[in-house]
Structure formats: structure tokens, C-alpha cells
Length: 232
Image 1 (cartoon, helix red, strand yellow):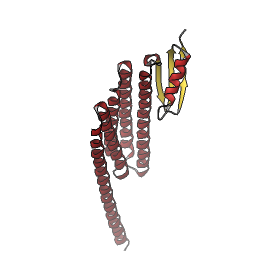
Image 2 (cartoon, one colour):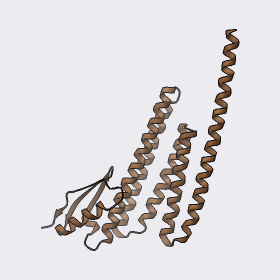
Image 3 (cartoon, rainbow, N blue to C red):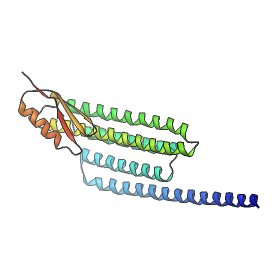
Image 4 (cartoon, rainbow, N blue to C red):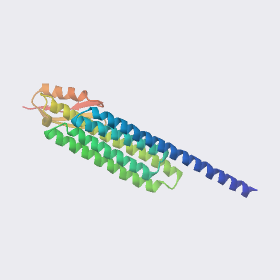
């Protein structure tokens, strides 16, 4: 009797698991199809723009698509291999966007922008490697699987934070390059978790104050710390 009961429970569990897996696959496909459809619409809307603005718009749409697919993957197909693949596509898309935004700049500001974008991309890919290693160790037990999910979310959060800081730095430098009072090459800009740190030498207090003011206006900036010094 007990044997029959165990077999029945096993069959019920197997059926339930198969149904749940099928539901996850359907939900993932629906989310992926929506992400691709939204991308096509957004890309078509970019046609109203001209020049580099159109290219930036298309890359922004690609980033949004990659992020939506990553979210769907983590929710419905949360396996280390699939998550890492989706994360890599998002990192590549964000890198392409960062480089495209640099094209609106010139001189040292453009060079610094591309260097920051490349550094952020390397950081993102390095985080992927860490996540993959953790996954290989953890996937055999339920507790390890939980740890893996947490590690994956933390790595994704770190990657997005790094990219966000890079974009803030890029935008600050762009503002400096466009402002007649502030020279981009005189001010070193670094951003960590939304905190912009300014250093270097400027000709006057007015230029230092202007540099701080411009940095504070950038979206995403939490605080501006200045160690700018006046040239004597």
C-alpha cells in the first residue's frame, strides 16, 4: 500500500513539475516576443531623428530589449547558463550605447568617454565570469540554488551601477566640454555610486563653482565632492 502511495505521489509530482515548466516556457516566450515587438516599435520611432541622435535612440531601444529579456530569463528560466547569456547581451548593448553617445563629443572628452565605456564593459564581463563560477559550484542543491540567484542579482546590480556611474561621468564631461567657462581637460571627473568627485586645477573660483553647478544638474547625481584647486 505504501509503495503504491509513493508511486502515486511521485507521478503527481512529476506531472505538476512538467506543467509548471511548460507554463514557465510559455511565459518566457510571451515576454521575449513582447520585448522584441517593443524594440521594433521603438526602433521605428527613431527614424524621426537625424544623425547620431537616431543611432543613440536605436541603441537605447536595444538596451531596453536586452534588459526586458534578461528580466524574463531570470523570472522564468533561471538557469546559470541562460542568465549569463542574457546578461552578456545586455552588457554588450549598454557598451554600444555608451560608445554611440561618445560620438557627440570631441577631443579629450571623446577619448575619455570611450575609455570609460570600455572600462565599464570589462567590469560587466568580469562580473559575468564570477557569477558563472558561483553557479557551477552551487547548482546541485536547493540552498546553493538560492545562493546562486542572489549572487546573480547582485552581479547584475553591480553591473548596472557601474554603467550608471560611467554614464554620469560621461554626461558631466560633456557638459564641461560644451561650457565656455569650464575646460574639460582641467577637471578630472570620477563617479562612484552616484557621487561625483572633481579634482584638478582651474584658473578661477568662478570656474570651480561652475564645474560643481554643472555636475549637480546631471540626472542621477546624488552628491558632488570637489577638491578642485585654483591655479596660482
